[in-house]
Length: 311
Image (cartoon, rainbow, N blue to C red):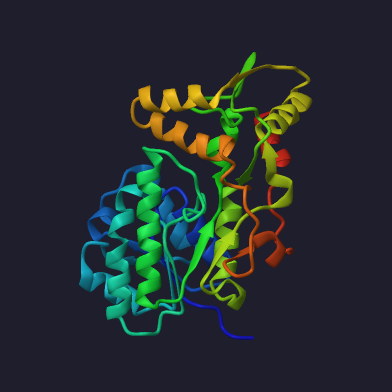
């Protein structure tokens, strides 16, 4: 059996990056997290704790910066695989990672740019979310043009973002009497636990089946319509909620009239719950593979299990 790749995570202290870095260490990879030297020395308590957790898990902290080419090249030279989990404000700057990979030599076996959402090549998204998705598309094309081997991870909805509000847009907390549903509530969406996203992502890095493909995370138990999600919750709490349905026309109006970032939230919900962008296409072998089929040994957290946390 081939030895496991050494992995560098850029954006490791971010929302999804921490799950990827810890999964990498857990899966037995030599794992490196790029952190700014100044940031490592002067962190808020939560981030300082995270860095301690990294070190306790065996993650090596490497000082460097996305905007310091030399340090980026130096960090990349230590690994075989680069995973980017940078936030949306830095998506465009991933061209700097591509340049650093090229300047570090030809040894990088895989690059995973920051995706972890909808498959941006197969969406029907309106502004203001469209612009962010367009940047991800531009990065995909830049990666392909560079000739660097890649995997794109389409993880669909982060469970931690969407399940605590039962999939409602712009709502904090679980419903008490009514649930607002965009569209007819029958379009299927996919919800994936963040730890599972980390695990599936890391399992893909050395897998020839995911080379130059999109890895889709569609665990069968986690593909639910909004109506099904509400029904599941009603069954758990023994209560029926009033369902308020919002037409597509009304949703588009809300997107136009809402402030940032609520307009982005509505646009993403419109893409998924009305246009069906998680599930409105078949995964063809020519462009993609599905994670739970490739890795049946992963015991993923189902939506049913996830909701039990709120009881």
